[in-house]
Length: 248
Image 1 (tube, rainbow, N blue to C red):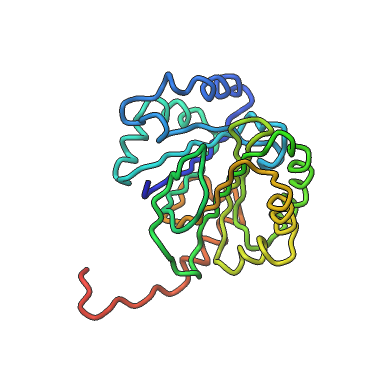
Image 2: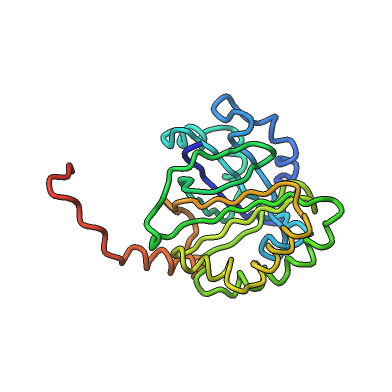
């Protein structure tokens, strides 16, 4: 897929039972415009997404598209409306896959578009499927990584997403530029130590890493000051000059 959207929704406590049931029975509500596998509702963990306990008020809807103009049709499907309309908070990210490796449930889900300006904001998506014998090691390492990610001044937004309790964790994080992300991921950090241990001791049965161009952000951005600041800084940067003779 060439285009992807991540939408995060938060609900009042009174709507939690309905949201949880909808996630469990989402296949019953998918229309023809949302073929199975292209639109998926997932839960988020507690404590910002990085807890073994779920946050039953927060959910993530992922949409994979070959044609971004189909997004309007997706938003008119019964599943999307049932997810979006009751929410008290919404945050939408429209993305283009740039580079990555690995699989999600055995599938290579993205068609990568290539390199991007390293000074532009982007999203890192990771997903780990944990071997049953390594669940304790994996989740013992998560709190240090979570704290380091939250405290990193250049991470504008981060959320953990789950499909299978304890056995999988996907992370979605927004970064201002490539150097900022690398300072978190690879330079003597808790994340780097955890990555090395996972490789050495074979914690994971499957993993995915993808870098996604941040094309558009909509919704309640003002509720996330770090994300709002990152986007404002991007807007203030001078755009590259168009070549002479470029079409307008």
